[in-house]
Length: 138
Image 1: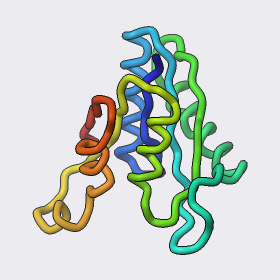
Image 2: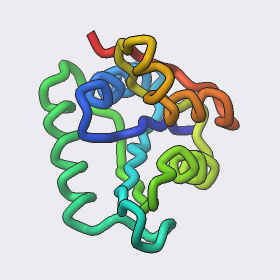
Image 3: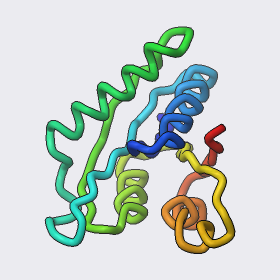
């Protein structure tokens, strides 16, 4: 079964993509890139992300792949929209795509930052039906 990586525009997400590519190569499996387009407080959650968003994600992932040595695993982007609940959207994508592992990126935070931020990663770790590999951005 494939592994998944949670994608965003943050630097720690790029680190997660690199780690997920390494894992997929080592374990000879495919990669599912999970992307959630945030619509803010408006919009209908659960719809596919816009084509331009998906193409931008595909280009970002391809850039990371091109920078890595070795043959790229099979990969694809799956997307959805969310109105402020990215963790729930990611959990739904995980369940829908039958993956063995989810890779997410994280970064060092201050004590206050730990209280106010990082809730998406924390929720994935606590609620994911599959193991979650958290990689720290260096």
